[in-house]
Image (tube, rainbow, N blue to C red; front, side, top):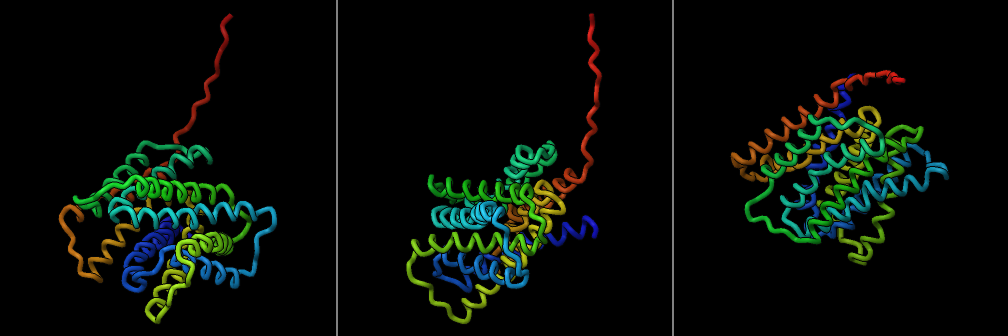
Length: 296
């Protein structure tokens, strides 16, 4: 399978993640976000476990719990706190630092080369997201800012460690383990946040099925598949497609207006992704071995 096909399949994950906002607001209004996270992660993980019928060996339990916590429990919990305490544009802009953090962590933990073009592309992507969704009336909150940064750092570290700790199983199985672990870790958070289960009607059920089966099970299989094939530095920039998808869906479905500034931001995001992929596809520079001659 070609690299372009791998990129396309991996890009579907953040594009679908962009639908989470509109599905949550339209199909799950008033739902506690921690319960939404739990009901999104655990059913998806159990579904994939039923399909794969493979559980992690005892030696992998600790790593799976850590990865499930980083990629789902901590990430989603911090994301929800940030969403409550910050305007959506501020939270999403801070979350957009994740690709830059992935580049740094991949260099530190995996020895990946840090290229100036990739760093500049990540910075441009952050700027594009800010233009796309950051409003002029944005207000800052210290706890919300910290939560947004913790969420970005948690997902970035989870992405890099998911590449470093690659079990000898297919991406479907790897996603099943992490989603199940993340869902179980989210359960006590949801219970503390709101002890009673939310009331689920037909519309809410359809929304939860979309978020769990499509927005979690399918997308994270694609994400971990792309991570294994392409590496964290290559797929990190694709995360910018998530806020772009959210804004475009609001424009298409909810008839939300797009300003010239937002259109400029969208163009910058697409350009940054193109530049990041070009930088990632450039062969590394050869290292010249020079002999050091001693002088007597």
